[in-house]
Image 1 (cartoon, rainbow, N blue to C red):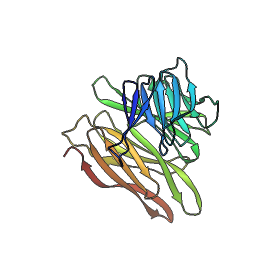
Image 2 (image 1 turned 135 degrees about the horizontal axis):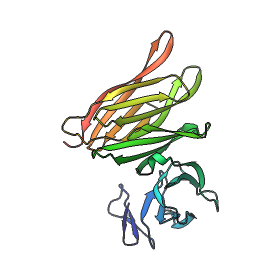
Image 3 (image 1 turned 30 degrees about the vertical axis):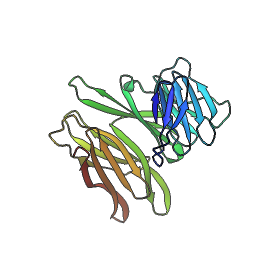
Image 4 (image 1 turned 90 degrees about the vertical axis):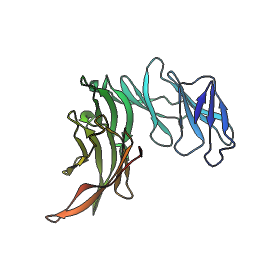
Length: 266
């Protein structure tokens, strides 16, 4: 999807020869729907949802007024998360005439951060807002605001990237597993897996080459089906990590294990 002088050009990778051109009056950013031929268009505080196929139509809109939107993202097929300088909002565009609903306040420790991602756990019991900034030494540091719906409170975690996945427990309901990757101020990397509301908390070092002193974790993605984490860094390194289970004193435990590392830099 490409924006150019009031046009949104949508390219179907299965048909490069016939790009769709969607005419809009103004927009500062657009994000495609996760699965459907739908796009969200933002112009300042105005958010509009357009159906592109089979027939162009506007499906809904909302207006955040003068509130600055620092980050926005589809979090499911109906809902967009809108991160302002003050709070996190969710907007369900499928409800006619609906307005964004505030979920929680943005923590003051993220005030000087560039927001780069936002995540929700299964069951929508936890949310995580991720931002990065530079410290006085010039190193990029990251923090995640971890919010609990049940506790109605937040805590700040030193992390550049994070995600939620499931911890399957035989005979018990699945637990929320909060996974986050960090590189601290002295350059050491660490991957953490924390069972929310449980007793499991384990970590594994992340190796960063000495030739990339400014590299840091950028994206962390979980595969619930395979129990695998995929980590991408700013400098183009890819890590794959398996959280394999083991039994200790008759109880199930787990620990992360890096399986593969590859560089997109060649």
